[in-house]
Image (cartoon, rainbow, N blue to C red; front, side, top):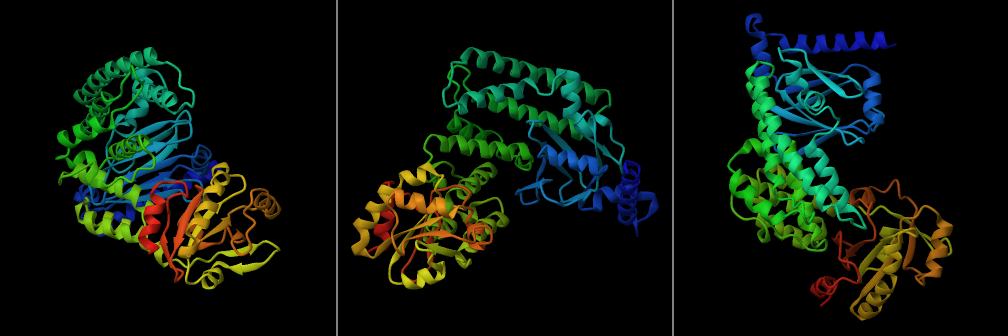
Amino acid sequence: MRRINSILWVLIVLLVLFFSACGRNQEVKDQDEQENSAEIVLVLKDSLVRDFLRERKATLKYLDDANMPVTIDFSGNENNLVLSIDTERKAVDLMYTDNSQTRYSYLLAKGDSIFISLDERRPWLKTLNSERSVYDDNLELLRNRELYHSTYTPLQDFHFLWQANFNSPTPVDLSEERIKSRKKALESGEKELSWLDSLKNTGLIAERTASFYKAKLRFELDHLHFFSGEKGIFDPRGALDHFTASITDSSEYLQTVYFDEFSDFLLAQIKAKDPNELLLPDSLVSGPSPFSKRMRFKLLEESLPRLSFQEADKWLNSYGNQLENKVQADFLKARINTLKKERPDMELMGLGNHLMSFEELLHQKRGSYLYVDLWAAWCIPCIKAFPALRNLHEQNEDRSLEVIHLSVDKNHKFWEQVVRKHGIAFPNRSFIVLNLGESSFLYQLDVAFIPRYLLFDPKGKLIHQNAPGPDQDDIEQILDGFLR
């Protein structure tokens, strides 16, 4: 079977190369393929490689031509051995990650055909249609083996230590370890820069490969300075100001996966200081620089789902033309508009096994605002919010606001027990969703995180997809804007 699969990939690659070469002059075939093909082809050696990637929960991530992240995973049932990346850029960096925290970057050229196999249970790449060394194709894997004799670099070790301490519910004093680890990471970075220069000078890597990995390493060392070894904290505001001022005129950084992931990390650190804060772009970034535009997009992507549709439209009108490109603005608009237009196709069961659709409920409650609580019996924060929800309903009942409880439980009997135990067994206000896995509305809404609160207007139209909780200060302000 393995021999048959190996023959299969050879035939596939030959076909790809043959058709990409058709109609071109034979004497300049290699150059034309590189310059004219807008596709990078990735060919897995056989089904064993695909199964390995699936088992490891591996992903391949790159940025498309609009600088939007694209992730390829192997979790589905697809058995394809051939993948493709469409691009008009000369080169694209591909980030490999898996559940062992292994991370490798690969620099791929437009028009390349890449063969992917395994080497000591690590992904091993080989470019088939151009002359490249094994270092060009697998630089970071070989760096770890030859330079550090380890699966992870000292820089990665520092980040593991920092994250473990930062995310720990009971942090321990690891300041001494962090200081040593940070110093070792900085020293190893200088050693790695020299190693890259030696590879370039001896012809083992191309100039483009050396430039990419040196720029990536310098960037990683640069933002390492914003981690405090003593206090174990990261300075997001300082990093934001620094990178806005220092590299924002270079689009080369902004087209890389590692910089996009740093932007996500930066936003997460900003939010960690106040998870409930709505991040208005002007409060953090301003100006026309590319990095400011990137962060503006990240801020909008994070904050828009937490606004009413009316407010989201205002933000998009204000900031939509201040992003990197129109594709990003269209993406944000589509996220809002898709749910606006989605029919709330939920089938419900109330107490006493009373069946009705959510649309029937909306029709029945026409004339009232509905504050919908999406919850589950296993969700402790959901249950803790019940007293505040009861108060919200009672205090605003004379203003035509009703609180509706929709459970996303799968166990109907358990749901009814919890409803009665915690005092929300309200006739015609407490229901369980029956078609949880089939509801397109809930799929678009993404109810992976609950509690979640929705607001519908008196005509049955969804006006807020992620309203504040009943115990949050700004819920009254939002309701006052609607309940006049």
